[in-house]
Figure 1 (cartoon, rainbow, N blue to C red):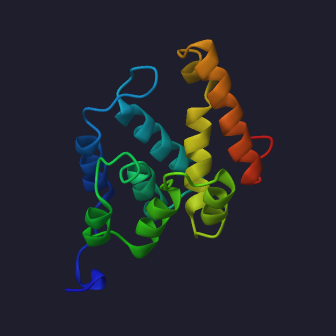
Figure 2 (cartoon, rainbow, N blue to C red; figure 1 turned 90 degrees about the vertical axis):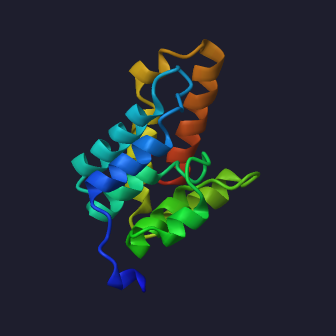
Length: 154
């Protein structure tokens, strides 16, 4: 059975899978990690993203955080584009930010998902819940990534 022979997972199913996969995880402020996934998916939708991008938003950290395996992703009933976006957004151990940004920029649809991810990560209300050193480090990290991606002024 090929990818095109299978009915693709609905966005509702993708959301349910992502919520289950990340159910026990929390963010740096101790909030349920699924709140971040929902915010990124909503941010992609608000920016005019399509279903492939919204599905990728729900799954954008799943492989990186080991919530789902890369094998699961390859076998999942998802479009090739959704899989490619998730893989583009999956940071590799020791990977320079420039390499990561270049992969995002060369993967169709990935930039919009990363833009929504960075917008939520850099949300001042979200950052305010962190200690000063962490807040400063992450603010600089997100600003650098926005610059590498050409999202200056975001």
